[in-house]
Length: 403
Ligand SMILES: Cc1cc2nc3c(=O)[nH]c(=O)nc-3n(C[C@H](O)[C@H](O)[C@H](O)COP(=O)(O)O)c2cc1C
Image (cartoon, rainbow, N blue to C red; front, side):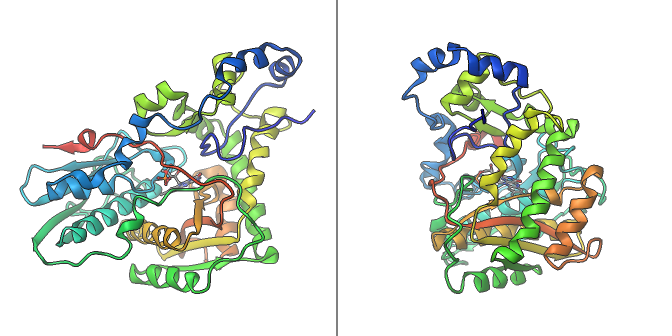
């Protein structure tokens, strides 16, 4: 009997787990225990606890300009929702953006490239929010120098943001999209095409930051991307270090989600029951040839739907480029939101750990970049999600501020 994954769009799996050992799963299917246990949870909501998504509600309520900027910036997309940022406000009129060394992903992101992309997205939203208040923000990148290319950016000062005088900037037309932007991880409608002109808008944004981008659509162009991304997902799942890194960040159920407000939040009644009864142990690494992996891979099917794949590449791969990629990426996502288009990064094949070398090279070539010369910074499926995405948890503003 095939195992049904949780309903589409419910748990936000990033990557998607459900590694039930076969023996336990058969027991599960055979017994009525789970059905009985699900009873009290029937009608129970998958929605995230209100306090966990509170930061999405009133970021404009902050009167202090720096807090207004930061309250918007912390809504930035970022890998595994680690929220790797600290804002030092001790110098008046200045924000020092620091990469939080406790919030890195050393296994899946061994050089902190994705983490810096998240910091770049944060930086861009801060600048946009400053402009909304009429303040130009002068950005000095990496004021203490860049971390070595193979080092993790632990505690690195990413940028110093200095606020110019009132009236020095005009609002950014994408600002209203900040609160509407969400990463949609459910199945997309593959029959629809992207709106005219959006790809050109994305390219212009990429160019503005010194990067390039393109969209691959149609079955012939998408087939190799589907194959490579699937293989990469499997490699990440069966590699114990990378699987366990994600597993440790799984927040299952309202209490864990409200406590941590980060990571991979899973709140569907189905997953909560399985986890509560001990049938779902995130720390069990899926294995090839076993049903545990088959069930994880079942969830990948939805991740092959969409109108196309959007790629964003940089010449070289220095730290400035990684931050610029984050700035460009979030603007591209906001442009998509403005046009009613959804976006979902699929980063496994872009990751730099040893076992990923094959898919890493292949995905670069598939989008027309030469591995080692240019760097694919982001790859996302794009299109129209069948289920509307909702806000993901964020930590309180106060937790990221140092005064
Ligand atoms: C550099 C980067 C890599 C990401 N990679 C993935 C990914 O591989 N799979 C995925 O489901 N989401 C990925 N995301 C999206 C994040 O999971 C998402 O931004 C985060 O959970 C916050 O949710 P939000 O974007 O809806 O606010 C990535 C985001 C960034 C910035």
